[in-house]
Image (cartoon, rainbow, N blue to C red; front, side, top):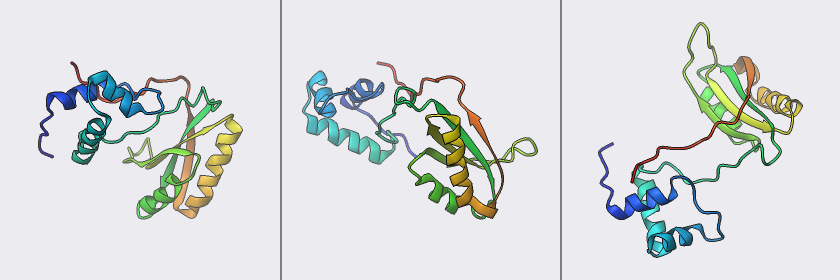
Length: 162
């Protein structure tokens, strides 16, 4: 990808939104008011930056703990390489899976190539979700494990300076 030129307004929009959009009924209008712009320009520039790959996505990042989901498990799966992409697509569409991605194995110590993050109100719920994923993966899955979160890590993206 070639370098993308950002003008001063693009940079101001990124700085104003990189910690998150305001919790307001019309967040883009609030950003626009803060920057002395119109909301349509803010939205058009964000769409342009998304299309160019400057911004990967705009989405909500819930605090699972605050919502009562205190058992958070990264389920890791050793899935046949010939089937992992198709099966991963199916698993990623499950409502209780917040992240689903393929990663390279690090043999001999780490045989897992499919990672799925699930959130439950307790570990029994996470185990039940893992069993449902296991049913979808079927005989293509040789083994799996669940790695539970032990603390909350602050999730942030790249930050640029003023």
